[in-house]
Image 1 (tube, rainbow, N blue to C red):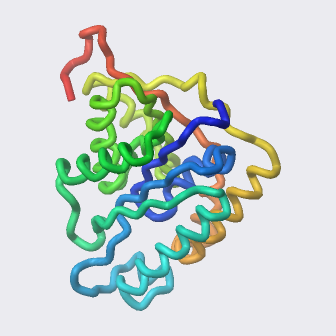
Image 2 (image 1 turned 90 degrees about the vertical axis):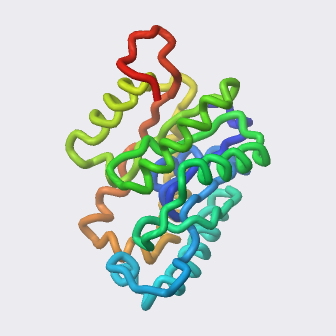
Length: 235
C-alpha cells in the first residue's frame, strides 16, 4: 500500500482500530481513527466490563478510556475522532440512519483515499458499525473500502466464515486485497505493542489469557458489490 494513502479507520470501541490494524496505522502517519462508541450513559451505572477494567462506574470509565485512546493513537501519529454514541453495555444504541449520517460527515471531513472498517464479527456493536459502513460504501463508489478482522472475535470458531457467507448473500464480495501490504518491521511491531499497552484498562479486563489472543496477525478483506446478479438477495 502506498504510504501516502490518506487512511480513515472506523473503530467501534476505543481500542478496536489498534487491535485490528495497528500496523497499518503505524505505517501511515496522519491516519484518522474515528471511534463510534465513546460516550458515557446519560445516567451513571456500573457494568461488569467497566468493573473488570478497574473502574468504579461508567463516567470514570469513559473519561479514562478516551484519554487512553488519545495516548495510543498519539504513539502511532494518528488523529482521533470520537463520535458520542453509547455502546450496547449502556443500553442505548444509535439508529442506523443516525450512525450512517455521522460516519458520512466524518468521511467528508477526512477526505480519505482508503477507508478501513470492521468486518463485523460477533459483538452487536461491531455488527452495527460494519453494516452502517457497508451502506456508506455504496454512496462512495470511488473510495476503496477494506475490512479488517475484529480482534479478538476473529478467533471464535466459524465467525469469519459465517460473516463472509452472510455478506455474499447480501450481494457483497470480499477478496484478499492486493493493495494492502501489512508492515512487518520490528519498528512497526514495537509501535503497535506500545499503542496497545496504552489501553491499560482494557488489557486488565482481558486478563493474561485473553491478552494472548490480541497479538494476532492482521488480515484484511477488499469489499465490493457483486454485480453478477447471482446474489441471493440485495442488502
